[in-house]
Amino acid sequence: MPKRHYVLALVCYLSIPVVVIAGAEVHRLIDPEMARRYPDYERTYQLLERVRVGALIASAGLALVLWTGCCYLVLKSRQRSPRWLYLAAAGPLGFSVIAALEDRSPAPGDLYQQFIRNLKTYWRVPLEIALFVSIWVLSYRFIVLKRDLMISFESFMTGTPTSTIIAEQLASSGMWAAGEGMEQLYLVPLIYLLWPIFFNLAGHLFKPRRRAARASPAAPSRRR
Image 1: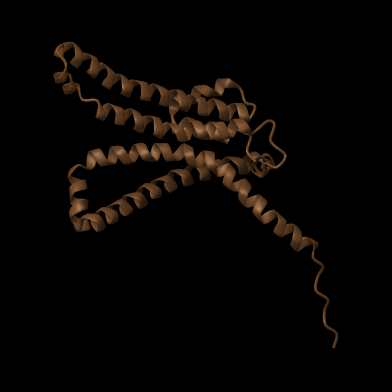
Image 2: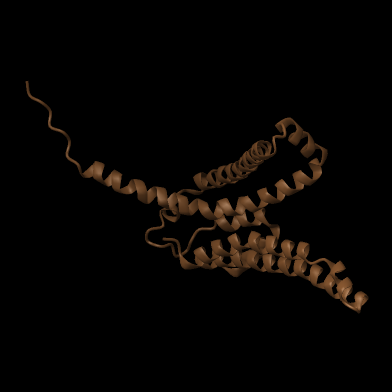
């Protein structure tokens, strides 16, 4: 099982899109023109506009707090100095360094930390570089797969040819590229957070099989 602080870090990170989407939805639902229903139109309009903008600012601020809290909890779970928290300002690039830090007090069943602690520096550095490249490539492939699935789903639901949908997206390629770029920036730290968990799950899953294979006696050879 991962440490409690590491689980809390994952919860904080998974809460970020919920907070951002909620803030955007509140911003969309509040229409300043609702002030027409009230006698003091100008004052009510300004009040609704401030609440509308404030919802976005509050969601952005809370998302920043959650991001900082996620990085801090990862450092705390690995008994590292809070000075590393400055790397949180670099976004996913900084988090890749935080995620690569060794745990100074690993849990007994943390196979991933046991694995990287046993590696020599000349093996550890290429491993982290390969992991960095693989995570960025994998996150991009996820975005491409999601895009293709969304196009196929929209074509199936509306009956619009996929070529037409693709042409519409290309017409506003800047907006789509920005959106997909933000999604990829979110996926990279998420994969970094999940990678040690998956590694440990796979290790514990195959560990009993290896033990059983070693414990089983060799089959006796048949005599002629």
